[in-house]
Length: 135
Image (cartoon, helix red, strand yellow):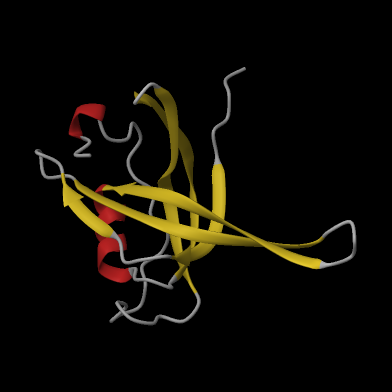
């Protein structure tokens, strides 16, 4: 049986998306969203834990992100985790990002949404070749 790599997040953008294009003209949007978990600790105190997630969107989905998303906007994202490792000054470093497959804008339209949001978008099967990644 093949493995499953699926992530579902609902959170708010920490900043406007950063838009770039590959050498072949494919749009890429990068942004971060915050998710906040509320819970009660063992002592009965209410606690909050915020996690920041790096999101990357490609192609048409990236263009939609660049046009409609802005800091503070709430989004629902489905995608997969991609990890990277490297060594810096003798220390092994790790990073993780979510490659978005589907995005749904939530909440009020807010800044950057001049017209009705489009329905969720999923990129074509196969994704974007690694050699087209601009950063």
